[in-house]
Length: 257
Image (cartoon, rainbow, N blue to C red; front, top):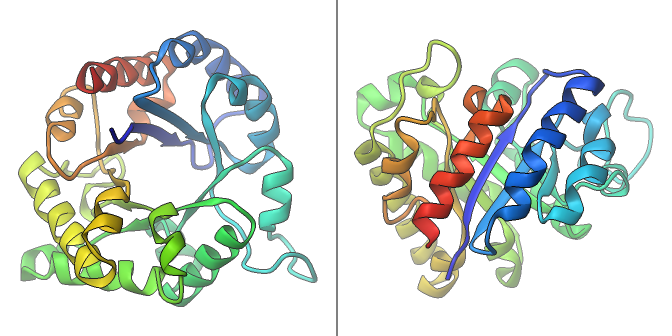
């Protein structure tokens, strides 16, 4: 049975003390999770190692919010897959809409980072999403599928199922975001699943983890997880609070039982 994934990216938030406090507070909850729930957290880079030291042995996957596609070299300000792995990360968030909009992350670079992650045994978590205009024009599925296909370009077929896809509508992210209804989210997830099946076969498509992110909260989490093609949740503000994250784990556990 496929695990239910519940995770959060802290973005550029928390200090060392706050990171310690969060990890300490969620430790009992993640330790109590059954094997059918997969917790993960993606701290800001300076705190990857300290969070991994607290939570790795409790079954939590720790991630990095970005990597360079190169192993080393004159890339000032970047961090390599070798370095994040050395700090305890096993997961890499790639292509978040904020990275695309603010820092010029292109589909081509997303693909390079996916390939670099896999090369070093890291799990790529690729964020894809549609804008408000694309939703209005009725091309959400086409836009998202294009991003997925480019992200997976030249990924060996035997590694495709190692890539996680997170559908995060740009119009649903942030403080002013409007949460997608469970039906809207499932519609795009189904389109992604069908496109993956057409490209790589049904067996690989069904193995792949598809997450939903975008104004997920304690009120809509359960209904989102009820959808056939939503394998987990990638959560923002609600999960930055340790109590909120623990409640999300409880909801996921109820679905997994």
